[in-house]
Image 1 (cartoon, rainbow, N blue to C red):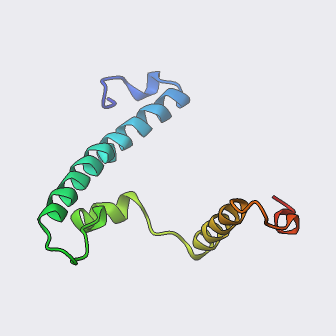
Image 2 (cartoon, rainbow, N blue to C red; image 1 turned 90 degrees about the vertical axis):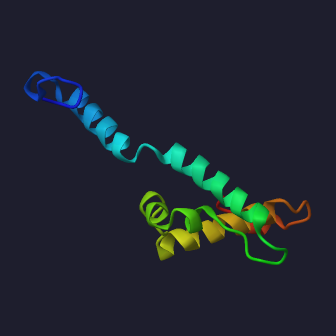
Length: 104
């Protein structure tokens, strides 16, 4: 029996795959709830912090879950993101030389 009461042998592969994804998402599908409650908790904690203290972030509130839901980026992903951010910054300048934008 599947989670919703169907015999797996009577379900086509695509539907069974969808069911498996939904089941998996159900186990970690509380992402929205975790984000909202974590953000609200961080906001409440930050409201009580004295001036000059470092603010709480979502990863401070739910550290184990945060690492699971948002795996750390690889070095290549970090380099790609930095390149994209730099390009976006350069594109904001109206006087930037066109030579910078070749290949975009």
